[in-house]
Length: 176
Image 1: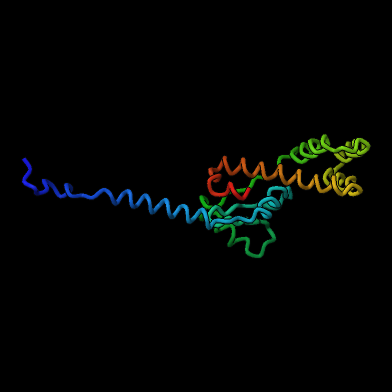
Image 2: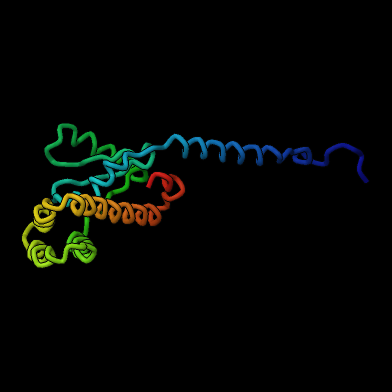
């Protein structure tokens, strides 16, 4: 029998507020997604930088790329910030030791000028294969431009895969 009065203090609890709160969270997340922009050029540069003294971190809150190098003026402050907010900063991995050579070899297979193949083979085994490729292709500006585009597309693909591995895809897909 119901007397119209609540049986306990929780009988009149309005759980519709939970749906409103979830809607508010979705709106906040959408706003966050829309406002978040990262510097793709800096990200590509960091990804290609194989200098052993340079380390890069991605700030997942504002999309900036932070360089950590022992000669930086504000090194202590920056490293303290990264240590303090470990969940916010993600280390950008260095390119693998054979990654550049593999990319250059793949690009070499697409070069239309067969007369360049033996020279590119020599550049590939030189101590600085990228500089060698750039020098060889400097007499063919269209191929040099294609090399730059090829390398950047490879880096973008690797960045996209790294984003997916770090659950960042829903935030930056449209920029990559």
